[in-house]
Length: 220
Ligand SMILES: Cc1cc2nc3c(=O)[nH]c(=O)nc-3n(C[C@H](O)[C@H](O)[C@H](O)COP(=O)(O)O)c2cc1C
Image (tube, rainbow, N blue to C red; front, side, top):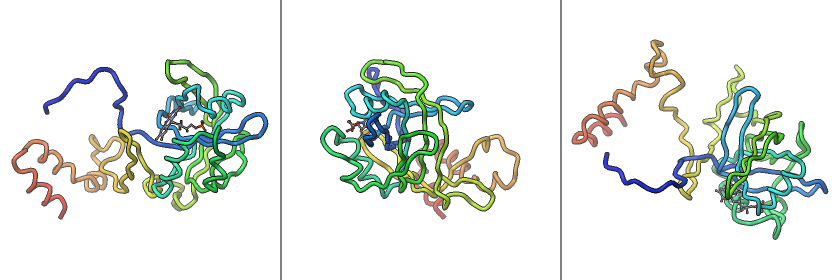
């Protein structure tokens, strides 16, 4: 692989794109889009979002130290983009987009009812970094669309039609898993059978000349 070296910049791709809802002390609700988000701790369950101080949401979240992460599906990509390019200082985005909200169970910030996953968070620490401040928050509770949960209680996020964000563009997340945690060392026959395509990947990587042929075989 031949590579080009770039100076330090943001090339971590893909990332999620989510809509954050918040409510200020006067009860005004706002929604804005965030891509600089990540899981930071398992126990206590924590995540972080990075916010520029000029955002209206920054003010709201700093006032109440609460926010909800709403994870969209691909059919809501327009709403995701809109909440990321229009400020609540100019337009009430919730009204404009006709977004249904419901009060949080653990916090006062509401969540977006029609987005499949809603994560209620309380801010624990704010760290100024430069352009953005890092908000580290503890997850208080999560609402998950019932249609994603099977009879055994397993959650199938792959059925939610989630999206990712990569270098300025939104992409659908594939439904088919290409591997699972620990499968690379698994001796379980069912798991090995499920991910047997991995042999094709190895062939593909090794033999540049035969790649087209290998892909054709794999598709069958
Ligand atoms: C895909 C996408 C991702 C974004 N990610 C962030 C982010 O992580 N942090 C941030 O401060 N702004 C981010 N923005 C910009 C804000 O969402 C945008 O400035 C928004 O209009 C702020 O709304 P508000 O003033 O109502 O809070 C993003 C925008 C888009 C379109």
